[in-house]
Structure formats: C-alpha cells, structure tokens
Length: 171
Image (cartoon, rainbow, N blue to C red; front, side, top):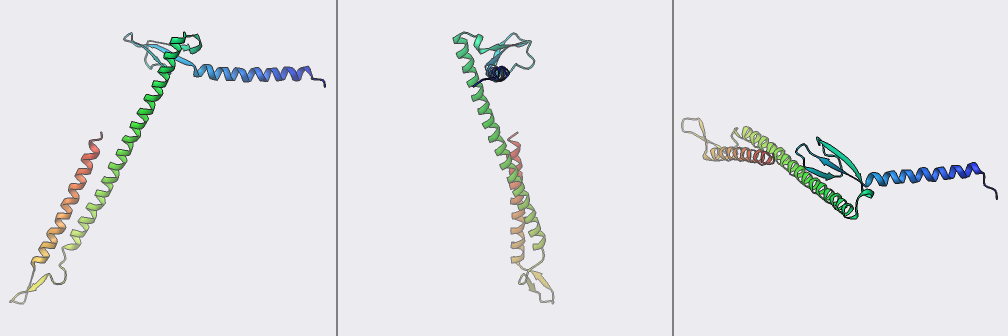
C-alpha cells in the first residue's frame, strides 16, 4: 500500500493544529495574573484586577512547584468564593421574591377587606328593628358586624405595612 506524501503532510498538519489548539486551551487555563494596585498591593488572581497599576500574566508552567501549588490553591479558593457569592445572591433573590409575594398577597387581602367593608355597610335582613313611631333603627348586630369588617381592614393594612417593612429590611 502506497501513501501519498501530500496526504502524509496534511495528516501531520492536522495533528499539529489539534495539538496547538489543545496547548492553547491548556495554556490559557493555566494562567494567573499578578496585579499591582495603585497602593502598591500585589494581588494574584485568575483575572487581571481592574484599575491595577500593572498586571502581568504568569504561565503556571514557568512557576516553581511551590508557586504552582499556591496558584492552584488560589484558583480553588476563588472558585469556592464565587460559589459562595452565587449561593448568597440566590438566597437573597429568593428572599426578595418571597417578600414581593407577601406584599402582593397582603395587597389582595386589603382590597378584599375594603370591598367587604363597602358591601357590608348595607344592612342585612334582621339588622333593623321597628320603632314605635313607625320607623326602623339598626340593631347592635349591624354595628358589631361593621366593626368586625373595619377590624379586618385594619389588620390587612397592618399586614401590608409589615410586608413592606420586611422587604425594606432586605435592602
């Protein structure tokens, strides 16, 4: 079987291109940055520090074994910190959503209580008593029912105020 030399060359070039791409990916993943802040503080991180006076990319391969371990430890710490921050942000977002749901629920309860109070102002059957002079007057039951509806409105307002206070405390 005879192999064409141009096919060999093409195969070698393909292998070299794949190897270079792989090396570039590994090399990029193995870079840490040494940044010097405006105050002279030196920081090592996975990304250049914004506003730094000077940032230098360091390849992990060029570091001593101790420096390489320190760089890997730094990476793990940054990943852990980022995961912790993400978890905190997610928890905070969930707290905001719960607070917003409580506000919406309290607003609906207040609207329902106010509607019930408006509708409740009309006396029901049995809440009027006949007077001697031919007229009628409202019974104590009417005033108790109306007071109960007013208390429900006050409670709904207090719930809404508490919901707003709880959400404002998240700021």
